[in-house]
Length: 193
Image (cartoon, rainbow, N blue to C red):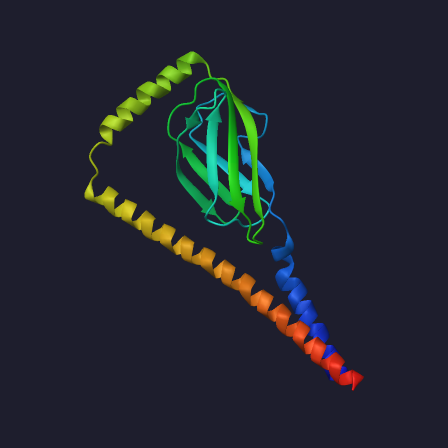
């Protein structure tokens, strides 16, 4: 009986240490830009940092004060970090960034933050001139650039497979819990006889 009690205690401790991240709900830790901040330079990208790993199915949207949606590109999830590129220079005003994510624990969460853009007019004009010149230079992809794009696509596939492994771990823990409960029930039933 002492061996059974020791084995049970070991399994419970193992479960407690391996499953603790599974029970933590996902919340926003910080962001760039931060809630309520004023952006005074050109905003090229947005990054959200969460308290735990999030699923790749995350969605992010940026809206201007009048409700117009601003296009975001290259939405990327990297464990607890969710980022996107801002595709066009933002005009001065208030913006709302909203997201819809699922944490590794399966808990869905949607929320939003707002921030203000206040850039001097001369800086905006310089940025637009620079972007136009860069667009003209980048119109033709070289074979090296195409190879880099293919490599990035392959890397995204590897990240998607890693997310599938996380779901497998959650399933394994659930099966382990069911097995432990079954063993305890059998032991208790044998004791009563």
